[in-house]
Length: 97
Image 1 (cartoon, rainbow, N blue to C red):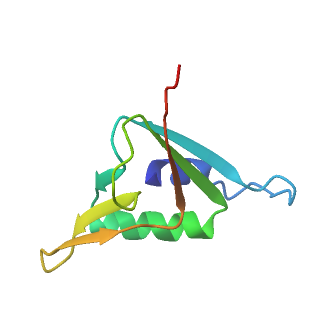
Image 2 (image 1 turned 90 degrees about the vertical axis):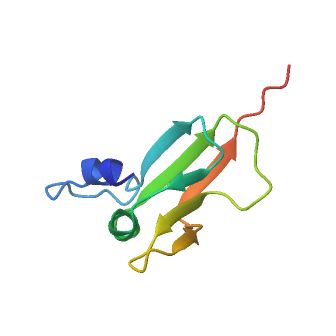
């Protein structure tokens, strides 16, 4: 996600107010739980909120019974923490015949 936000950042771009949102779609085989680095999560959150970037995650697994997307990280005290960011939209694939 940080790579996508870095790729979209262009200091020479003059934004047109009608088309300012960049959209990233990520297809994942997982269930919406991701282990992330805390510093990278902080940097990504800051960058995504400063840009007009929309991120959608399409998970190919069945939806879990907990809140998703769920980012799991270890803080500086080595405690396991969880975060459900508001800047990611998630949906699950349903294959009905």
